[in-house]
Image 1 (cartoon, rainbow, N blue to C red):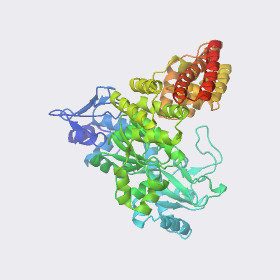
Image 2 (image 1 turned 30 degrees about the vertical axis):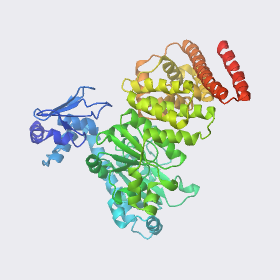
Image 3 (image 1 turned 90 degrees about the horizontal axis):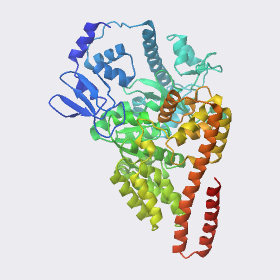
Image 4 (image 1 turned 45 degrees about the horizontal axis):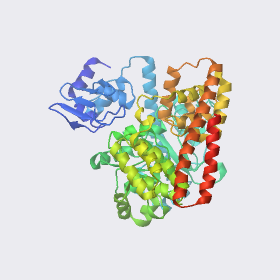
Length: 592
């Protein structure tokens, strides 16, 4: 790309306007604007944009550059693509493309062709929805009260019950590489990278299709709902696999349509599924986005933080939805979002609730959304409804990780006071546990950016990912699977648990449950040498003994609480039973 064109675009570009599409900027001087850096998590704004000189700089992670560098980094595209993107934003006519290398040209060409084939597929599915075969699909949408306007707005379509027709239609316009890389087709034969290498057939068949768009509104993937519910039909919802265009954990459904409302109203409503999102959006509440299922990732948190730091979570009230809400709370509170939880009467999801009660009732429920601390305390009371000391201990243990994740000591103390009052915690020992959590945040929270790990965690992870350490790995995996409680309080608990339960693969990163765990493991593999397998096996043995000692120490503390509570109730039989267990715990501790 010619230097004079780059300079032309740069001169004509308002860097504040362009970056302001991605970051909420506030004026902080005559020519300076500041905001939260989109490239790392932070508490207070350290990201600065200078309008006069046309550059940005982050005092936290030290990212810097001009408007092209910013767009290249945040969109994950090549420099020439960034120049063209900025030019399009500013309405500047584009010259003929030039690339720095054949590889760069090929990669950009493939991405462009993948975007084009997804647009072609969207139109193919839209047209198929009007066919005679799609009568059941239209009936289903009508039964769900999805209007023609909603179908058109979200470009809902239908995938015919045919293995070959879509392939034959698109192969007239796209080459074999694009077809195989698109994720639109499957094959009974797969390459090592998971790409289809045998004869292609349509991935989506006899399904209602929902396009998944990037921030610019371009289709990059699909989710498709089956019309039949038998085993041959596969899962109820089938998603596109990851492709050069699409990474599931990097996309928020409907962000392209909702981002303006999220910015202007300074909050986002987070729901689970596409139908929930479509219903709420088309009914008039527009700052709504969906996670396309129950997964929510750190990348999505960073993406959302470019538009707002206030979120209302409205996941389904079933067990999966409640668990997803709790995981979302953990990620959002660590990123210092203001979070509220919305629950709907009757156990309904947002789609059904709006249909049965109207959008006004839904908006009222939204206004009454609970602060996340109140929601978690109420959930602890629901999970452990008995008023016994044992139930109170379980409720406290459920709440402790959430207390520790709060970024502010004031917030943690308030959480502790509310929990103690609502749970009826009278024992000073139990309150002491909560107060300890209020003043000591989890190591995983303090070290999120540095990804620091304790030596215990390093030893276990080294043993679980290396084939050279088979004896140590087998012991660690079997012991940790048998005693998941040993992992309580460890920053890498989810990662260790996932690796212990997964078969050893050439790429252990595939077993990591989320982006943060993958980064943590990648950093460990880069920094740590495995060393002597026999020595590692010995270290694993010592570490497992340490974890068992920690478990016994925790139980010893719990038993003190339970005995004090039983004495207060004058329950002699319970005191005797608990004291006998305490003797066993002390004996086990002496033997370690």
